Length: 171
Image (cartoon, rainbow, N blue to C red; front, side, top):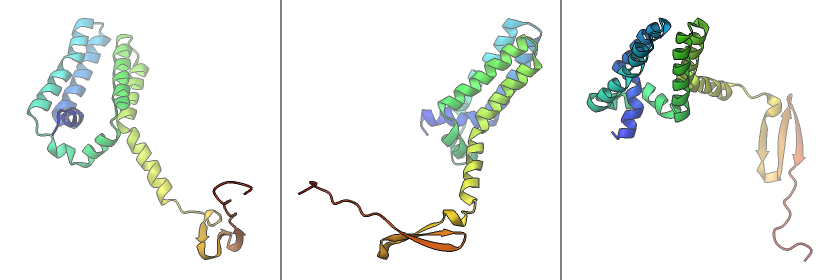
């Protein structure tokens, strides 16, 4: 497994997730109390240490081959990671200003960044599994050079216009 893959898949390791959540909860408490140094240290120190430890010592191959790993590989883009970071910073600032709505907004942004691929997949499944209305069904009829368009059961045949010959015109 390459370093790039380890950096990607370590994000779903339980130890890393527990460290991120635990550090966030504890640091937001200290930031709410306006203890800036301890709040920032508890928020920004444990996650990189946990990341380094997981990347160095954990076996991440099973995460790579899991369904969650496949989702992560497809949808955890740098933009999604940046959005997660923005949501995290919003929660930090909101805790400092003692704004529950701000904290919930930041958490919502983080949640959306983690799950936006699920919305895309759900929409794709809806589109793929949706029945095609009869009036949109077009069946080519190649031998006759025309196509049939079924409009509420009645067939109507229209000729496909022929392409002009390629080459010099007017010769």
